[in-house]
Figure 1 (cartoon, rainbow, N blue to C red):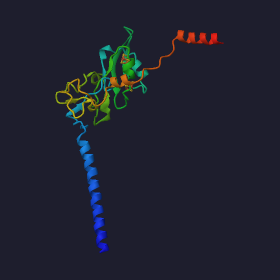
Figure 2: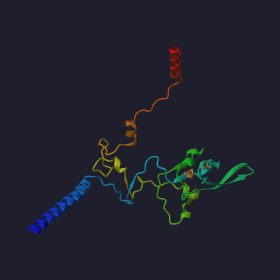
Figure 3: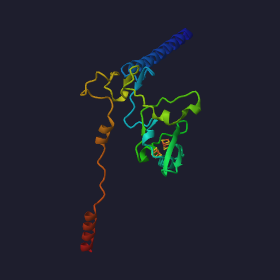
Figure 4: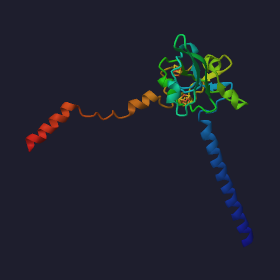
Length: 215
Ligand code: SF4
Ligand code: SF4
């Protein structure tokens, strides 16, 4: 009799444990059903890169003066500027220009310091290739106009999902006044405390004067 009661007790405890585990599992499932999906169906959907995204470099051959500033400011001296000196005109003649994107770290130094602004960073990030040597872009490849997520008709562009209202994944029909799930960078900056101002020269002098008078 005692053995039977023990069996019933064990069975009941196992059943309660199983029900608790089941409830825990379903609570996680139901909790996730309320959340927004975070998966982008790449390559049919793509997130729009941020405005200052540092993607493939675009180069304008006609504006380049072969000064080689881009080479000097590059942390790995990467750009190859191929030029010859024209003895008649005493001017440099540019022959070729190349950047190897298999080595480039996309720091943007060359773009920042180029005196003629012939370099610019694009939002192009799909540079995968089967052969690493094909990542070495010459001036023709660098001069190709960049693709854009927003102008590609075969792609559905998505804004950063975190900025969309809860339950919304399609950014196109979202009214501007609907509350966002996350804060935009500008809104985050507004919430930060104002920077502490350095004392001006006059303020510093007046403090010194006050200390002198106290003494
Ligand atoms: S810094 Fe600009 S202008 Fe000078 S060589 Fe490089 S790309 Fe050409
Ligand atoms: S982005 Fe940076 S690493 Fe790449 S070529 Fe320019 S300076 Fe060099």
